[in-house]
Length: 307
Ligand code: GUN
Image (tube, rainbow, N blue to C red; front, top):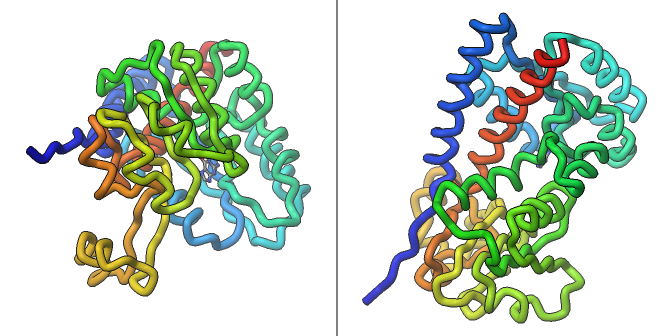
């Protein structure tokens, strides 16, 4: 009998979350005469960043958030960006500020992230929010990791006592996701580029979360029967780099666009072993946007309460 894992559809779950956010925003408009506002600073012409920002604008429009994008040349200085952030920090109609990463080399990303008011830091990257996450205090939590936890919870996957392996230790995904899993009482192992034997840490895990940007990193022999797999990777593979298998599986994408998007997991071979698996695209990606919108609503609620 061929087993098929349950697909965890981020597209479906994110649509539910957006509906919930939209309803709360309508209520907020009525009761508090406040419309949440999100400002995004986009520097340069990075194609991936432009796609993300366009998706954020679309998501805001869907739920009733006012969105504003500040576009800056890729020759900007740290001070130029700090001046924009200062203006946005002082505006009452802007509740969330997000600086799309990565920034050009000449810019000091740490200083930029530190300049965003922690109350408006809808990415949750400010050290104040990171520290609150460690201390388990209420705060704005990075969108991708909180989206991952939301997916697991809404699929009724047990986290308490589960062995979870986090592959990737970035500030954006791996580190905050590790803390969120710990806060749910999972036993967490964190792996990264210097990990000596990755398979040793994945093969017995109940839950594997992968955020590395390395296509095909997680192969079938690294995964136990019945594991839950969350794939955060987004890798664009062009036709000339694709394996015969991938060319066949994603035939339509290659014919239409000459490329396809895959995650960090060898999906076709790992999927039959997994109990649940998130696809790419349509898995974690849409969850990030939904959680960002939820964070913007939360920041607006905090501003209303402070008034
Ligand atoms: N670049 C890639 N992911 C993210 C994210 O979650 N937030 C921001 N600001 N930039 C990103």
